Image 1 (cartoon, rainbow, N blue to C red):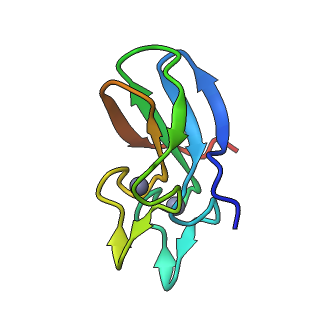
Image 2 (cartoon, helix red, strand yellow):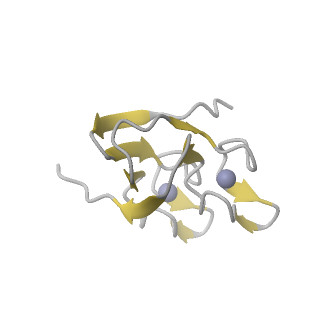
Length: 94
Ligand SMILES: [Zn+2]
Ligand SMILES: [Zn+2]
């Protein structure tokens, strides 16, 4: 399994990464992925622009820890290298 962080788009403070929980497929087990809402990608909004996005060290990029979502990255599988950030669900634009 490839657990590398897949950055889809990066622009200033905003980075769009592939959802680690569903691996971009939009579904997790029995239904829609609860991390990305089925979109397959997640938007990270960092406090500082051009913050590098790295693999979550706790879940190893898979977005899950034990039975549920990783509490460190919220299931995204990726975290900014430093600073504060917000997780926003991306909207599929086409
Ligand atoms: Zn997902
Ligand atoms: Zn994690």
